[in-house]
Image (cartoon, rainbow, N blue to C red; front, side):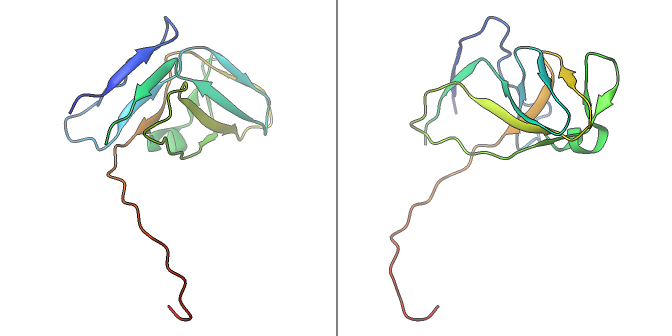
Length: 126
């Protein structure tokens, strides 16, 4: 399968599977991002995907420009196949102080899934 990816930022990193057995591909930040303690942010990837038919961060923390790791929560998201805007990674800084995550930090993974649609039928009991 081929996935077309367009860089809209010169510092963007084309996604990759770190290991042949991985189910998700790695997504990287394309710029430093600073987030105040307890606040949410969106890390830009600098990529647009043509879509056709990271859990270690939670345990170890995300590296910061200060050289320490910080606790963040990365939120799961879904990208519809007709979306052509820049992909962003939504996360929350769980620390009570500002952090800066450096560009090219592996912050999330993407997983390709088959999509099934259905017809909803109202019934009296399920």
